[in-house]
Amino acid sequence: MERIVVLAGGIGGARFLRGLKAAVPDADVTVVGNTGDDIHLFGLKVCPDLDTVMYTLGGGINEEQGWGRADESFTVKEELAAYGVGPEWFGLGDRDFATHIVRTQMMSAGYPLSAVTEALCARWQPGVRLLPMTDDRVETHVLIDTAELDESPGNGAGGGSGHGPGGGPGGDRRKAVHFQEYWVRLRASVEAHAVVPVGAESAKPAPGVLDAIADADVILFPPSNPVVSVGTILAVPGIREAIADAGVPVVGLSPIVGDAPVHGMADKVLSAIGVESTAAAVAQHYGSGLLDGWLVDTVDAGSAQAVEDAGIRCRAVPLMMNGTEATAQMAREALALAEEVGA
Ligand code: GDP
Ligand code: CA
Image (tube, rainbow, N blue to C red; front, top):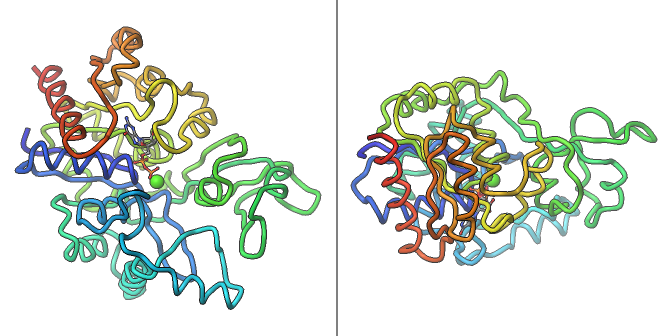
């Protein structure tokens, strides 16, 4: 199992990758990162999931928070707020700002995101090849009720900038908001009626993505959000097909443990796409056309049979990423299951 491709979101993907690197330090790991969470703030391009992977593997992450820089300060943010310039709901620290300035500067000079990501990684040395899923603009939007938007907390200056259809004065009942607005500002506290990766249908996989998948010995889905992380990556035309056609084991780890997301609000976006928040339902959602193996947590051992019945080999092992050794063991289990289904 030399060449490993991992489709990753932010925190769940990054923490798993750290365990994978500990388990197989010499493996050649290519990460296809979600860019549907990307957002322009203060004129800067921010790529939260790519940065979470880069900072986590590069040793610069805020460990407790799971995102953003360690040892961070917020002077720039405070100064912007003093000018009345928001949004205030998105936490950008001073150190983090530098990353977004460099990225935006390079992109303004004409470099694609994939080249910019490579340049940023030259500093962080994450020990993996980090590729954005696409160099094209894809933005995940969430459809919510406008009434909930108006009543929601933090709906002040700088916030409430919805996109897409609806939202006119006294007009449509529903409105599409940027994923970050739904997740960070509204804290996923309102119902999501739909999740749409806007622009995905015409996006092309970034250079290197399809080749890495075609050349992989194994493909892993870490316990990342199945809708707004892995789902968004799979929405880029060509990626899902390349995985299915690669002819190598594809193994995933459940982000749902005991019928709830371990962290975050994956249940809200799963319900928007009509999928139950259970480890088995997520496996069935990916389907046997994509997945060969699926790991559920030991507390969900009872659901393993339902996964097997869907044509996906299933094992129940501890899936809580409490520290690097526990996470490395999860990675070993995933690779062992890959060996098993590949045999
Ligand atoms: P995000 O982009 O930062 O939201 O991160 P990801 O999409 O990569 O991962 C988010 C998912 O990770 C959530 O749905 C969580 O349920 C899952 N997750 C976080 N910590 C753990 C853990 O310790 N074990 C498992 N199995 N899943 C986890
Ligand atoms: Ca994310």
